Length: 428
Image 1 (cartoon, helix red, strand yellow):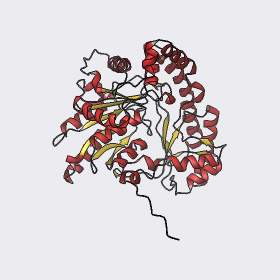
Image 2 (cartoon, rainbow, N blue to C red; image 1 turned 180 degrees about the vertical axis):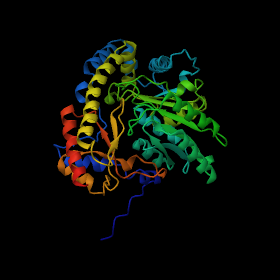
Image 3 (tube, helix red, strand yellow; image 1 turned 120 degrees about the horizontal axis):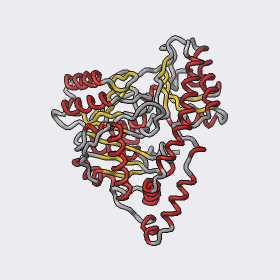
Image 4 (cartoon, rainbow, N blue to C red; image 1 turned 30 degrees about the horizontal axis):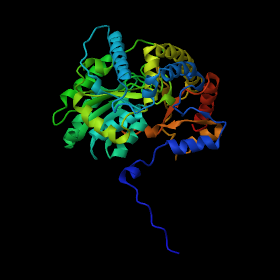
């Protein structure tokens, strides 16, 4: 019997292979009672059902305006929502910096997307050709690393410490790329400046300014952008807010800002946004019109109502209380169960949903290292740190783990860390 012909897969489909979500979810589903310290989900009990119902009812009982909410919207996104997001961004930065910095940003520079991940993918698809380079922290957000790979670009890792991406290391990376004749392929520097996923670190205002100045200074053969992925900015549990990198670039010449309501309101509402320099607004809009010709309009109108009626930040305050308790529970459990183990250390984040844990060098935390399966058998799962490193530059550390505390209760977090620590000690 003749063999069936093999299907042809595009290069991009082949480049998308190797993401960790599939095998990790399979492990979790095969162990239904497992304590997941891997999932980057938000707390289910804190989802804003009452606020969303109130806003949805207002949108859907507004006569002809209700019909407009159920119709196609604009490619850029709902104008009211974009205005509210821009004002929120400006107010946050002015409050954090303690000044009245003037901004010069038009609504046409703001795009609404179904979550910020789509914006980041669209952005990468707009500025990258195959072989182009984006520099990023080492470790960095693995979904963005995967998006760049999917497009045929390369990520180049830059060393970090407890305060995030190190400017001197960024300078050294650019010097190295210049010596290799690759500076002309560098398109952007990707940062998660607030409570980095996965590192849990926050860039100081000084570091943010320095990274921006480095991008400007090295924009010799082409412009190098700084992408500020601010998904976690509002989830601060201690310390004072830091101005966005955008604050030091009020004309938005080099800076690109990404944001989302997924972590601070609801992931199911699927509303994210991006603010781009003027020269990117047209090309990115063209790309977007080929993809969706406008994010879901009803979700946008609901979020615009939530913001206009000042219902959002009160909900954020409730979330901070929930997540602060869980963050403290994880940090306390790590100190109790792993504090005396040589080679174990972690960043004590002030917000967000992630903690970056480093184990002794001889423990390989990856899918093929054996330790992950041992942890799963013991009843706990995590994201192997190896997925969070760029394809080039600073080498991957295979003894690292991304832990998240958004989903589990404080009691389950303590239990999960204890089970993990028992495996660490068994592998000593």
